[in-house]
Length: 132
Image (cartoon, rainbow, N blue to C red; front, side, top):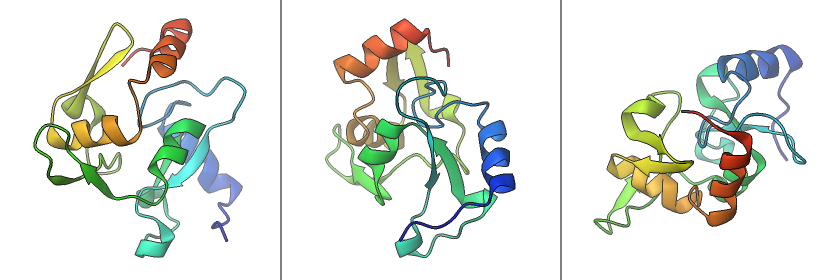
């Protein structure tokens, strides 16, 4: 059963994220609403606190699920995913013509698992003119 996120906590998360996904930077517009994601899933001992919650678009949240790590496609090593509570997006990624360029092993694993550069997601970012 999903953890209930009280409205004041939900609003604080949305405002901290500036109304955009903390993984792909997609603004909160479109058919599917953004969701609150447990960075460390409850089943892994993650708490329902501001320090463990991120604002995620539908696609990023579905691809991430309860995963904490994935395979870095460059090294084939198990690598932690980006933790938006402990790591800065701009340290790990840059945006280039609506494509998210990974700069670190964590970023490569995150881009691969969340399919951030799938052609439909790139096109959506172009249409929405997503900025980093």
